[in-house]
Image (tube, rainbow, N blue to C red):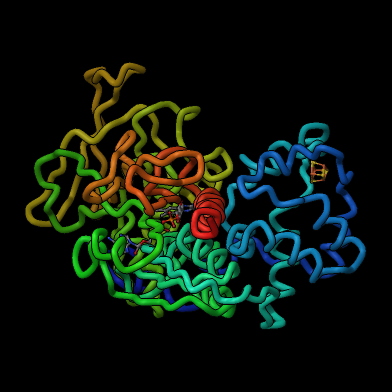
Amino acid sequence: MTEALRLDGIRAGRLGAEDLARNFDDLHAPLTGHEALIAADRCYFCHDAPCVTACPTDIDIPMFIRQIATGMEDAAAKTIFDQNILGGMCARVCPTETLCEEVCVREVAEGKPVEIGRLQRFATDAMMAEGEHPYTRAAETGKSVAVVGAGPAGLACAHRLAMHGHSVTLYDARPKAGGLNEYGIAAYKTVDGYAQAEVDWLMQIGGISLKTGRTLGDSLTLAALRDDYDAVFLGIGLGGVGALGLEGEGMTGAENAVDFIATLRQTADLTQLPVGRHVVVIGGGMTAVDAAVQSKLLGAETVTIAYRRDQDRMPASRYEQDLAATHGVRLMFGVVPAALRGEGQLREVELSYVDGDMKPTGETVTLRADQLFRAIGQKLEAVEGLSLDSGKIAVDTEGKTSLDGVWAGGDCAAGGEDLTVTAVAEGRDAAEAIHRALST
Ligand SMILES: Cc1cc2nc3c(=O)[nH]c(=O)nc-3n(C[C@H](O)[C@H](O)[C@H](O)COP(=O)(O)OP(=O)(O)OC[C@H]3O[C@@H](n4cnc5c(N)ncnc54)[C@H](O)[C@@H]3O)c2cc1C
Ligand code: SF4
């Protein structure tokens, strides 16, 4: 324990290197070969398996589990990658408790699902450890596609297009590819530089030229991309963050949760990353939980998530809520921020209780806070010339936008949940639609 642990303010080094290494270790240890066989043995290999229907990428789950059970790990990995080229990351980050594992017949009957996520990780890790890429490109088609955004949607789209023989230029505003896999997902879900290792492995398909530090709306325009390429795919995610609309939001200590998490993910030595002694997180989704849990793991003494509705309406799953609670994060429901206090540096947050109609009840509570994280949802940064639907890019069932030759998918596109696996599915499906359009 270091001296900084009990000091007010936003300070680095609240915990020592050993504690931090332990705290940010893998959330779920990988299965050993023996454990994987036991886990696979629990699967009933259901006909019309509900777990497959619940998977946004339609992975043939009973098939890959049977392949693991019969010692064919590479075949299992191939079954997964055929549908989801980021199957390794999804195995780590998918909220399986609300997708495949929620509907697994063994969950329904016994309250204990087959561990589909951990089995998926077992198979994909085994193949990736061999370093080889299982796909080869079709013959060059002579067609070129610009993919903007190298997050899960853009990567899945680029890979599928390259496989079909198209030549892909993958642009991203950030210095590294990976999107929120690299800059957003909680550190303990993707340890040991997995996001970059996965990008490198995926790029082995060939035919994809990655150009980082290129921003649509700045050094790139949609009009020029439409002129220069045969098709364009947009997978630019949601870059904007909403404000609370309170006085004092510019004070030191009041920050966007996604910026804090991005900094955390890019900090090699976590003893150098400052965190408050008392932290309040405003929001109720995965970002709120991740900011809160990681603040606690960095050594914050008190961490509170303040969510405006009741627990059942919290977007973070019950599993994520429990994860926060077991890390010592306090969850408050039916509260909204009413005032931020401090002189230059945040010191207190006043929360106001609200009823089911979001009307203040008149009751308030004041919490000490050196640091406040806004995690109240992200929004699309404007893209000129495209029709929008509920604040996102409007697309048809194939991901086609209102502009000819332009497709979109992932968080920036309307429809679907904002999840890694959904972004992969939409990127892959848009690539197939682009391929069909370029082949006619
Ligand atoms: C903190 C946090 C934690 C999360 N945890 C989970 C989780 O545990 N499990 C889960 O399933 N989902 C999680 N999600 C959601 C998941 O990360 C997203 O749904 C997913 O990353 C969306 O993929 P995408 O490719 O659409 O967008 P992104 O991953 O956001 O990638 C978009 C890419 O586009 C680039 N870009 C943006 N604007 C431009 C521009 N103008 N020009 C060029 N490039 C641009 C960005 O730099 C980025 O690389 C989390 C999200 C957050 C914020
Ligand atoms: S629902 Fe469960 S038991 Fe049935 S195939 Fe899927 S993982 Fe196996």
